[in-house]
Image (cartoon, rainbow, N blue to C red; front, side):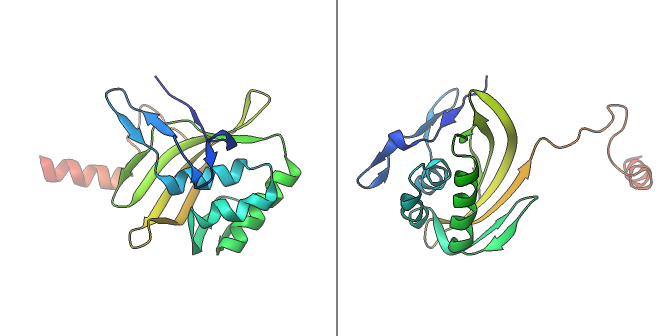
Length: 168
């Protein structure tokens, strides 16, 4: 059963976003604070507050990549958020999966919503810089990976034959 956790301004206190958690089937996992601040920035309606959220979320030299844009630096990320919030003020973003993590990387699915409808789905791979505890890289993908034909393995035939020969 998928659980959707919304990151919104309701969680912002004087020290930043608080009290945001993900429920896994058997235990409760806190959402990493930089990720809360990052998504709070994307959902912020008061654009003057976006830099404050980003300062708690990302490094100054953050790298950001998705199918439409690629840039480095907190200023580029702030400009991208401002552009989206200005052109689509009613849109909001929600985390639409559990957050997987290993080796300072986080993976999760997100949805862009408007009026209760999902307009876009995406997947992010986020890298945390261990020395700072902040996000230093975001690699975003739109939609789901294209499925392969169920009768095929997805492995090129030449490699598949070699693998079968090595086993046999």
